[in-house]
Amino acid sequence: MSQRYAYTQILHGMGHHLVALLRLARRHLHRTWLRFGVLWVGSLIVGLLGVLFANWSNDASAIFLKWIAGRSWLALLITPALAASGAWLTGRWFRGSEGSGIPQVIGAIHAPRDPARIDGLFGPRIIIGKIGLGLMGLLGGLTIGREGPTVHIGASVMYMMRRFFPRVSVPTERLLLLAGAASGLSAAFNTPLAGILFAIEELSRSFEVRTNGVLITSIIFSGLMSLALAGNYLYFGQISAPTLFPLGFSVPVIVASVLCGLAGALFNLALLRPARWIPRTVLTWRSKSPLLWGAGLGLLVAIIGVTLGGQTWGSGYDQARHLLMNQGPQVGWYYPLAKLATTVLSYIIGIPGGLFSPSLSVGAGFGQWMSLWFGRYPQPALVAVCMVGYLAAVTQSPLTSFVIVMEMVNGGGLVIPLMASALVSSWVARFFTPPLYEALAEQKYFGEPHQSHTPVPAPATAAADAEKAG
Image (cartoon, rainbow, N blue to C red; front, top):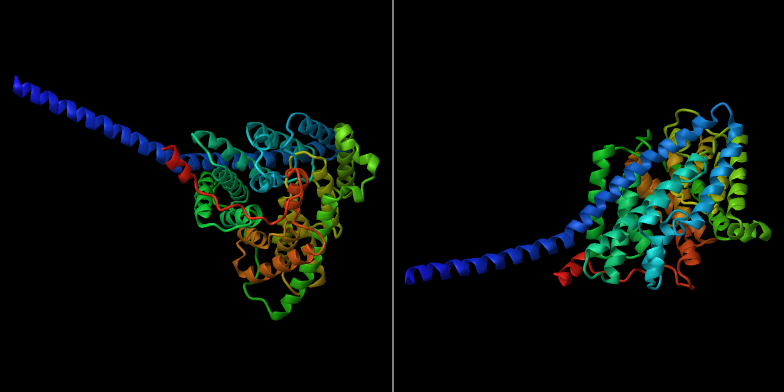
C-alpha cells in the first residue's frame, strides 16, 4: 500500500513538472512568435503583394496600349474617364490612399500621435484602394508608378500585424511601419540595400542599431518571397559602361547634376504650390467636383500622349530602359519635359500612384540630352548619372538615390559619378525647395506646422513588447 502511494506521489509530481514545462514552452513559443514570427509573416506577405502588384501593373499598362493601338484617339476618351472615376472613388471610399503613400508613412512616424488618423491611413481598405485604383490609373495611361504605393502597402501590412501583440507601444508601432515601408521598396525594385537606406534616410532620418536589425530582417524575408516568385533580376538590366573614366568625365557629371537639380526643384514646386500655376477657380474643382477635376487633368495627359506619339504613357519604364541600354526606340528631345508635365498632372489628380519610376524616366530623358552634348562618353553612363541626379533632386535623399540606381543596373563601376551626381543635384534642389515627401507629409498629414528632419525617437524593438507581453 505504501509502495503504491509512493508511485502515485511520483506520478503526481511528474505531472506537475510536465504541466510546468508545457506552460514554459508555450510561453517561450509565444515570445518567439512575437519576436520573430510576426515580423517574418508580415514581410513574406509584403513580398507577395509586391510581386503580384508588379505583375498586375505590367498587365494593366499592356492592356491600355492594346486598346489604343492603331487608334490613339481612343485615349482622349479612356484616360479622362478612368482618371475621373479614380479621383471620385479615392475621395469617396479610399481617402488616405491618394498619391505615392510615402508622405503618409512619414506623417505616421513623425507627426504627433493620433490613432484615428493613423487608422485611416493604413489597413485593408488602403491596400485595396492602392492596388485597385493604381491599376485603374495605369489602365488609363496615366504617368504613375507602383513603387511608392508598394511602400504604402508594406507599411499597411505591418501595421495590421500589430494586432498580434497584446500590448503595443508607440515606438514599436512606428517601427513596424518603418519595416513594412522598407520591405515594400525592396520588393518593388529588388534593391535590398536601397530599402534599408530609404528607411533610414528618407523615413526615419536617424540611425539606430536595433531598429536596423528589424529592417534588415524584414527586407530579407520580403526579398526571399520576391526571389521565389520573380527570381533574382536587375530592374533595368545590366548596363554596358566602362569601369574607368577620364578626369574629363567630371564635366558632364557636373552639368548633368545642375540640370537635374534645377529640373527636380521645378517639379517639386509644381506639386507643392499648385496655386502658383493653376487658376483658383479650377483648383476649387478638386474638392467640389472631383469628377470634373479628374476628367480635365486626364484629358490634358491624353492630349500630350497622343500629340507626342504615345511616348509619355505609363510609368516610363520602357523608355528609361531603352535609353539605359542604348537599344530600341529612342525618345524625342522633348521627352523629359513632357514626361515631367504628365507626371505632375497625373499626381495632382489625387489617385494612388508613385513617383519613383516616372522620375527615373525623366532623368533618363535628360541623360539623352547629355549624350547629345557629350557624345564622346557612353550614353548608358550619362543616362544613369541623370537618373540618379533627378531622383536625388526630387527626394533630396542622395544615398538612397544612388544606391537604388546602382542596384538596378549593377553599376558598381559608376559609384563615384553616381554619388557625385546625387549630392550635387540634391544640393542644387535644396536651394529652391524642401524634400518633396516631407513637405507633402507636412501639408496633408501633420495637422499643424512641424519642424522638418526630426528623427524618430530611438524605438525599442518588437522584442521589447514581446517581453512585456510574455
